[in-house]
Structure formats: structure tokens, C-alpha cells
Length: 172
Image 1 (cartoon, rainbow, N blue to C red):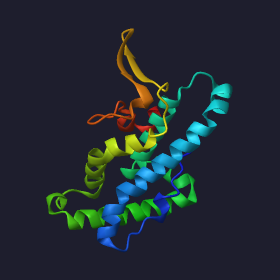
Image 2 (image 1 turned 180 degrees about the horizontal axis):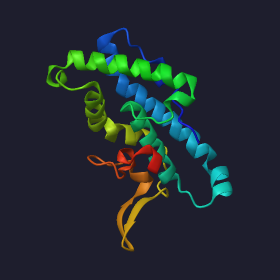
Image 3 (image 1 turned 180 degrees about the vertical axis):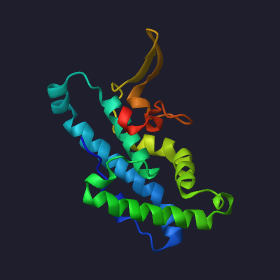
Image 4 (image 1 turned 90 degrees about the vertical axis):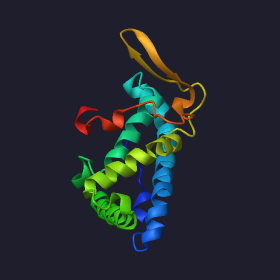
């Protein structure tokens, strides 16, 4: 299953204000379209590979989007369009940094981390917007279920029910 970033590659980077305000919309639209594709093809993937739950699949894709936004995608050089996307994101984040005095002392990679931390809940909501009530995201520790969310945790307000976006890509 691959990341569909068709909306993200079309982002306008020439208009500083527009780029800043459209980034969240474009990332959320890319997440939504990615989820639709993953949900549509999940049954045949599950038939071939076993018990992979759709919420886990969405969480891993969410983590991949986080890696792309934060400039940590290990597979950047393997697809021609990804380098173009990375260049556009670098320009967008430079524009965001230039416009926001509170973050103008941050390094470029810190600006990207800052943006992701502020917006990850919205991206999670976008990627889980088509999850069904029966799609349950749960965590188990020491044999006890510690977290249980219907619709893959779509209705969270403060915390995303996964931290996979902070797990290095090569460990997922």
C-alpha cells in the first residue's frame, strides 16, 4: 500500500499566504484520499496477508504522511515525484517561517516538527473520516486493553490514539 499524495504535489508555493493556509487543507485532502484507497483495497490485502486491521493500516499511513511533512521520509529518493514534493514543502515551510515571527529562530526541520505537532490531530481526523463504527483502534499492554476507540479514533479532540508517527520509519 503506498501513499497517495496527489493533492500535496499541486500545492501553490508562489503565494506565501496562500501556501501557508492551504498546506493543512492539502495535507488533509491527501490523507482523506489515501484512506479511501486503503479502505477500498483493504479486504483483498487482508485476504492475502492475514489479520491486519484497517485502523492499523491507517495509522501507518498517517505516520508516513508525518514523515513526509517532517522531512524524514526514508523512501524520498525511490520515487521521482517525491523529490519534487520535498522541494515544494521546503519552500512552503520557509514561507511559513518567514511569516510567523514566533518561529523565525527555529531551524527548518524544527519548523516542520512544529507544524506537524500543531496539525496532526486534524490530519488524523482526515485519514479516519471514512472509518466505520466497527473499525476499532485499540492498544493492549500487559494483556489489558488500555485504549479503545470506535471509527479508528476519528472523534479525538486532543490526542491522536497512535504515536506511530514518532516511531522511526525503518522500525514500523
